[in-house]
Structures are given as structure tokens and as C-alpha cells.
Length: 231
Image (cartoon, rainbow, N blue to C red; front, side, top):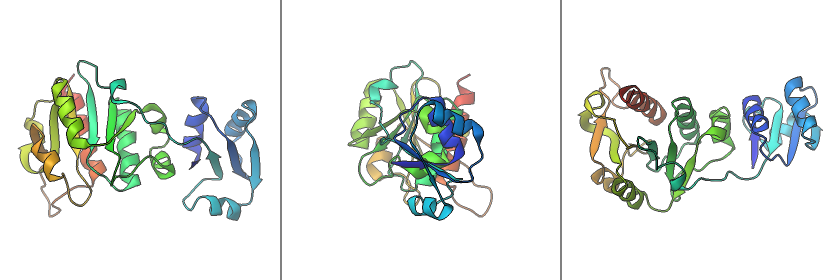
């Protein structure tokens, strides 16, 4: 896949990830990135801006890298910690939301993220760009069935906390122990079966006229509440 942007390129280079080829604007001036590419003997193709724009429609900042597709982790890679904190995304569709959640999860040192295989955004170049390279340090597992996975987590000692309206104030919930926090779809919220299999529903109070928050904003609030409660 194509990934783009200076921060993403820096993270990929820092972690010595495989790069098949680099496409770079002829007047690109970041000598640190250029030196690293040359040190790693990456094939570079110098292009005009309009040629880069054909490869990627969004703001590429003059650098596009062709890399292997993202490799997902296994659940076992991050659910065995005594106090594991994982984020479960219930069919999110917007790659910008997934990228922002990845960035928050990396900043908060969340153990991993779980996404469903079908009817959901997957890791793509937009997710990588929005995450500002944080994706390189976050484990994501793609599962076939969210409800089955939630029940597997519960059997492994997890408490599952959904985020939705008409629940308990998120400030009053106990986040200690092994916790899975579920973030619902941008428009529909939690799906019925997922909600029914949560142990608690956490709601963020709304004090203004807006009756809901963006999925990535809601995720950030609850993730940091969980982290600070577990100190």
C-alpha cells in the first residue's frame, strides 16, 4: 500500500520497516529523511507534485512510500497481561476516526485494538497518516465476529465496558483489572448484540445542545479516564 507524510515516513524508517520504493517531490528538503532512505538503499523516484497527486489524493507533504500491507496481530499478542486494557471498535467506518483512536491508544499505552473483519474500516494509508506514525507502535487484531471475541475475552477475565447513551456516568465505573472498552459506530452507536454482551455501559454527560461526541473524541475521554483510574 501507499503511505505518505513526513511523520509516517520517520516512524517507518525509525522502526526499520520494509519499504519497497519511495516517491519524492523534486524539491523535497527534509535531509534527515533523505539520508535515512539512502542509508537503507531504498529505490527513490523523483516526481513533480502533480505526479505525486495522482498517487495520493490527500496531503502527502512531498513523500509517498510504497510498503507491504499492514500485518495484523493475533489476540494472544496483547490480552494476557493481568491489567490489559484493550479497545474494541464496533464497525467504525471512517479511517480518520480509526487513525485518531490509534494515536490516542499509542499515547495512552493501550495494549491493543480489536476491529471486525466485515463492515468496518481497515488499516489503510489514511489511517497511517492520521495516526502520525503511531500505528507502528500499536497492535491491532482483526476478528471474524465481535460478539464471539467479546465472550472469549470475558472468559479470560475481562470486564467489557460499552460506550453509549443511557448508561452509567463514565466517571462512576471501575476500570481496574482486565478491561475491554467498546466504541460504537459513528452513526448507529453500539450494535444490539454487542451492547447486550457488555457488562457495563459508560455514558459521557452532555452539557450543551450536542447530544453525542465524535467516536474518536469519546474514545479519548474514556481511555484516559481508564488509565488515570488504574494508577
